[in-house]
Amino acid sequence: MFVSTAYAQTAGGAGGGDMLVQFAPLILIFVVFYFLLIRPQQKKQKEHRAMLDSIRRGDRVVTGGGIIGTVSKVDNDELQVEIAEGVKVRCMRGTINLVLARTEPAKGGSAPAAGETAAAPAEKAEEGKGLGKLFGRK
Image 1 (cartoon, rainbow, N blue to C red):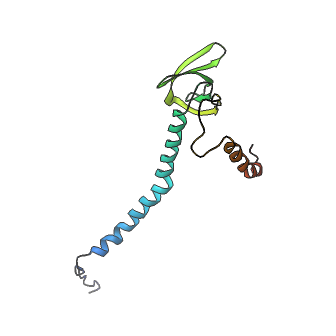
Image 2: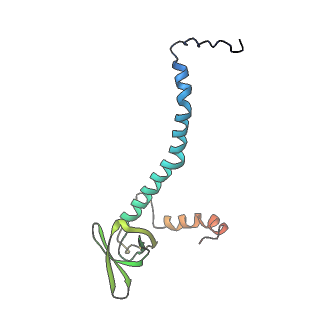
């Protein structure tokens, strides 16, 4: 008497549009994760790999263990890092976390890139001075 009769809903058509509405939040979450997490991480890995490939003799580096030293010898995957006067350690290239200071290439060692003259790098340095000064960078 007090209980009403429950009726089952009728089955809708194929439900193709309904399926899209159900997966829309999942797709939206994946897109947000891609742009906020995956893509920046891939960019950071690419920059780190480029930094590791460009290490050369004389660079000051920080290893994964926090040891600071100067690269004295470069092999394919190994570096010899001088951490104190007369103290050299061998480490794998992949364990380098940061390059603190880069050495300048030897004069006459490389030709300017196509379309770039010797004065072009000086002009590029002049461009960044305005904003660099604003934020306290040299």
